Image (cartoon, rainbow, N blue to C red; front, side, top):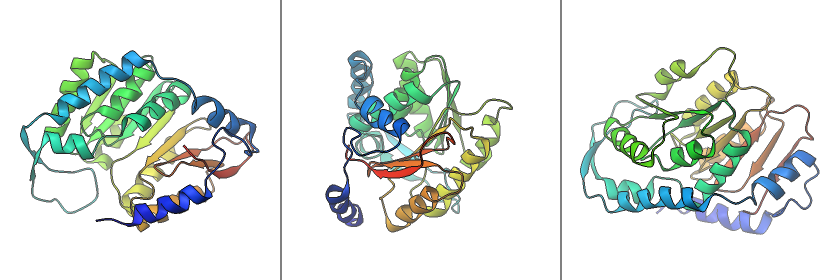
Length: 262
């Protein structure tokens, strides 16, 4: 059992604040926490996505799970039930709705996701901005095919699903003149790949791009990666909500790093 997140969560509970933006000195970040964080998500959209999640949790199909999403030596496929993947991999309802709200506010033109899994987080992102293209990358072919089924059933047409190694796929996403509005990084829970993905994104990001990293306290090395990103010279401000880290590059805002209770 991984006890590290539990220990860090105890620290988070003791140290976090600013629940409704109180005490945040940056007007921009105050508006993010007091406004975007508190906004409502369309209940019909939530119902549609969560119905698909329930369907996946009952799916007894056994698939070959092979992950090319990280820079590891190719591993042999691992047999897994779709229901098991659905119980452990996708973003939760609570944080899916937060992604929806963040994407609705910042996801103009292009949204990028590292790590599709079964497509739960992708659907929250895509429903929030039907006017934007969502590029999502998945390392496992069979998982990718199930995600595609979900997108079709949800009636979403603004998702571009790419399958393979993230480093290879990223070249297909670079579009001259178009900066991503929102990027969600959930493809690997190790320090080096996480930093690699962040640097790839930072290289094509604009002043208004927002990057969301998942599971920043999954392990000591993920916490290390988050610390490096938080102190990166290109980053002006961050919000840490324990489960996720939110990164801003904007130069016209009051800088700061805030540990926010969510």
